[in-house]
Image (cartoon, rainbow, N blue to C red):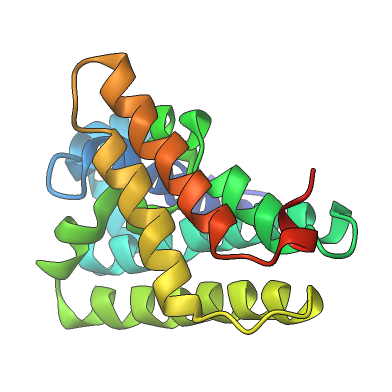
Length: 195
């Protein structure tokens, strides 16, 4: 059977997008290739026409997940008025929505520990994307006239989201979000944090 031009690329893209969501929601180890392919209406054997291994898929899906997050954050930054870029970025990242929807959020906040246990190939791919996210934070800060350590700012944001997913009671979950946003706001000059 002859497929139309671009068919293989479209199938690969579907697999990558689905894996990016499922990995963030369930964890890399919890997602089996057979179940992933079945959910897409594809065969397990067909997976190997697109990827050498689950590791190769995980690296590409991780890059895709970060690209989604970066695009969302860039949109937030570009829509923010001068002096509000970094605060708006933080408010979007450190949010109940991000906490409650890991499948559409930052891969590192969803899978940081999991990624640290993966192959060097995957860790290198994620490290490159982390560097880009840190640079984006520092660019937003610079555009607001601030000098901020992107590493420290990201660590605070990511830690808040990750920790807020642990407690069972809503008050404790919200406290990680609210207290971190308040602490980040205190670390910014007053003109930046004014609503």
